Length: 130
Image 1 (spheres, one colour):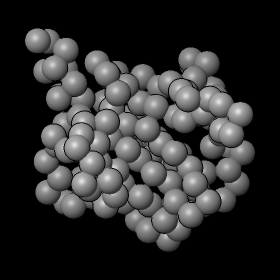
Image 2 (spheres, helix red, strand yellow; image 1 turned 45 degrees about the vertical axis):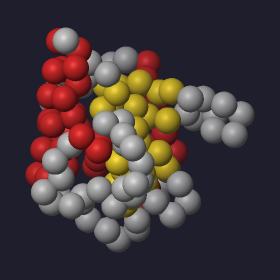
Image 3 (cartoon, rainbow, N blue to C red; image 1 turned 180 degrees about the vertical axis):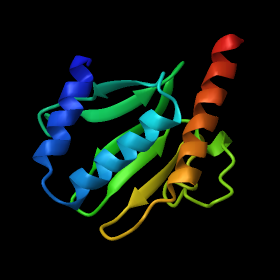
């Protein structure tokens, strides 16, 4: 287990409410979608000492930010991804990224989410091959 994975484990454990459970579930979906995806923790600062969990494969796939009222999954190149299930519900007018905000009591379509993750991996791999 990497240091980043251990940090994310600790962050999930410290969130002893629905947000920790949601982040853990999303993380499991990401890891299952493509086991080659690596985890990192970035952007640590005094106002966010835990940093932001990040999943990467040939570049950034998505981040998992935790807020008081939501867990936000931001896909770095989400605007270039097909989203037939309509999971993206935030940052819809951003030029490159798209996000999924999950609020308490909301369910995420795991199959559609895994498809988005795999599409992001494919897009990154194609860009890296150029």
